[in-house]
Length: 75
Image (tube, rainbow, N blue to C red; front, top):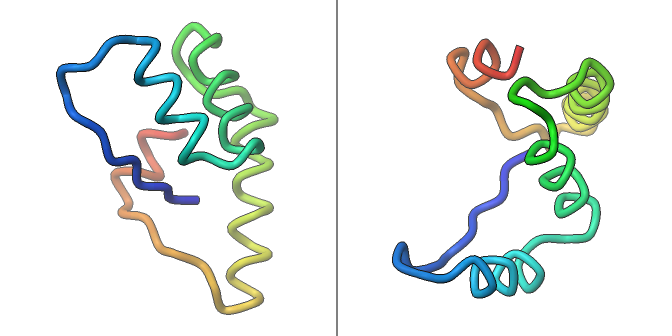
């Protein structure tokens, strides 16, 4: 899943949080929180969930592809 956020690079944490609240759907905000709370690597459950979503999108013909580097970095 790919989301693009638009913001200035010199902003406060509270402004960044406001931008994220405005631009990300709840599900993606929760995913971001999980990623930030983890000590680095995404959980096995998160990776499997994303793979399931990607597979469903592939079957529907709506999958946005990622580079091999992005996939390997995630793993």
